[in-house]
Amino acid sequence: MAGPDFEKPIIELEKKIQELRSFILDKKIDLSPEVKKLEDKLVHLRKDVYSNLTPWQKVQLARHPLRPYTLDYISMIMTDFVELHGDRLFSDDKAMICGLAKVDKKKVMVIGHQKGRDTKENLKRNFGCAHPEGYRKALRVMQMAEEFQLPVIVFIDTPGAYPGIGAEERGQSHAIALNLREMMCINVPIMAIVIGEGGSGGALGVGVADRVAVLENSYYSVISPEGCAAILWKDGAKASLAAEVLKLTGPDLLKMGLIDEVIPEPMGGAHRDAQKIGQSVKETILRNFNELEALDRDQLLKLRYAKFRCMGVTV
Image (cartoon, rainbow, N blue to C red; front, side, top):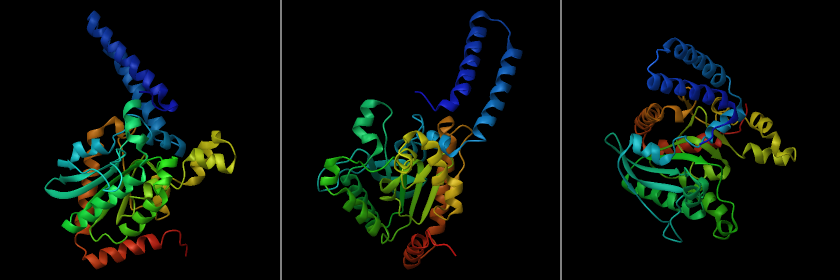
């Protein structure tokens, strides 16, 4: 699968190294000094590229086709996963994964957007864009988590809620608005992690949480850079400029108080070492739940309400 354009020199050099290694094995010739030179060059090239990423390049990494998705994190860091289906009103939205699981021995409810790896799966998953029944399903299982006093983990990875006519006819805006209101009152700890794209109301519809973390190369924004560019400058080609002014990356979001922490990624992005980022996500979840579970329920809800009421307020 093709990655961002800025990664092409790295990919080409990796390919050359692999070809040289194959040649050495095939011909049984010792070319280890040449391999070492190329590997050193690759290390420096990766450092130069990935240490100076622009906001737009981070958006491209957030959309990388090999990046771990919700089901990948579930399989890496959770056990005993049982998926729950349907909103009890219309259908089961495949773009929104919901279920019961364990992180270590801690029982949790997990919710997350799910994209596909190929065209067939993306059509099944609506490219990670949930319909109103997806948001209703998410709310149903959060209310179930409240009933059984289970903490909730939310993995956010969507360009936005599904924008089709059918979704609007079935109450897309109402479903998201209802989630915003009801999540403010769910009296169990909620932890949200943006693992890829965090686009608009599609992300916020399951993002009202006590703690919100963003992976280093993910983004969280009211609109996509392309959409912003099309509105402000009538030119989608200015997406890179829009990404810069939107302040949608982890460090800017943290500085503005819109998120609680940034989770570092392996050099080159989460897809370069899925197990490592999985372990970091797991540690973040357990640490935050340990802190949140120490609060009584009234205090938990008051702090959650205050957190969102303070956003956008300048002193």
